[in-house]
Image 1 (tube, rainbow, N blue to C red):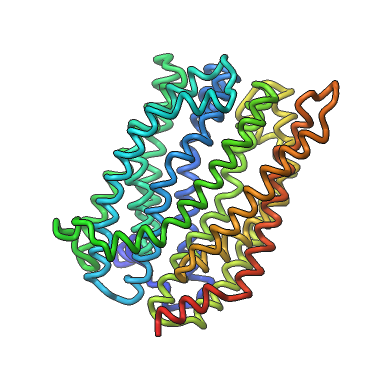
Image 2: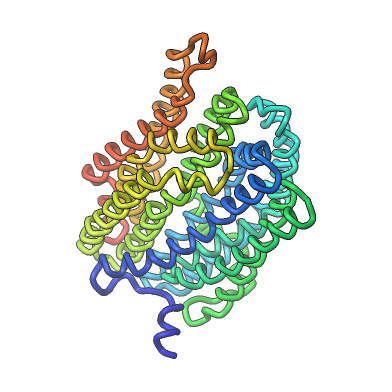
Length: 462
């Protein structure tokens, strides 16, 4: 019983061997991220097999717009996670209580804003991106349902971030596994049995996400030994809400910039027709799983650095940064090999069309090695964020997306136009992605070594 409680309790990452603590924290979070990725993957598999390739393209085309309008939640989640980790590491109960309470209130406000904005901008954005007429109706209905039901997604992602900041990644995993199972069952019922099409997978997703959010609330309400969840802590405070926004804004802007770049590139992708759009969806679904270890290690490093900065142990931060990054690189190297060897079989899960599977695998091979570069970027960026420096990762994202990815994609497309390829070679979409990942890793290593993040952390704890 004691071991069970320890498994589902908060993890103090200020003690023990750094790499072991990082790995133990990462594993349940990685499993949780895999489960979360199943939301979109199952949606794609179900519509691809039961509705058709155009429906698959519709679900994928909606992705960049969905991510663009959800950046508010991402920013709040990152800011809250950093503050929770630092206050937990410093054992400051009152500050921790105000942080969590303000996080809950900010999320409610953000959900309201997103719902209103989404209804206004979804259709114009789809038209601006030149979404093919054959799929634009499906895209619109899919997005509107997801946005109008975004309260579940918002609260799950933000409250699970709070739980991770407390060192409890296991509870979020269990709740997400429950929600994923619900999502899969509802997908099959709504689409395969009731014939609800693309709208069916959207309804299945928001119902499942609402369940995971409710479970996270229940878990937090029980952690009374660490913080208090009373009405007075829900009142917005300039100190806590302001700090959360300040810390989370660069991360939110980073995601916004990335999403805007994806929207711009999606316009280029759409110009190559429905078949390439569907292939892009398949690649991005496999990419979602391939990138999960990197994101998981990145989040683990943020919590690890945040707790140890709060505990005023910079030597431990540096030691963990080296060990965590090395493990992340090794993991991504193994995954890259698996993708190159078995990638075509993975693509076949999403479609029975041989030409579509071959095209998807060809594109996947272009970006496969980039996952190793992203392991470095995510791990070291996680350390910088945990130390309180969220600005440098944002600047790096600005450079790699605006100054590299978009110009390279459109530049290659323009340079390769011909009678056979009037819009250019479609490989440009993935070559540009690989270039941005590699440059991002180089810049992250450079700024990590310069050490602005370290000086900020030392100044904070003095």
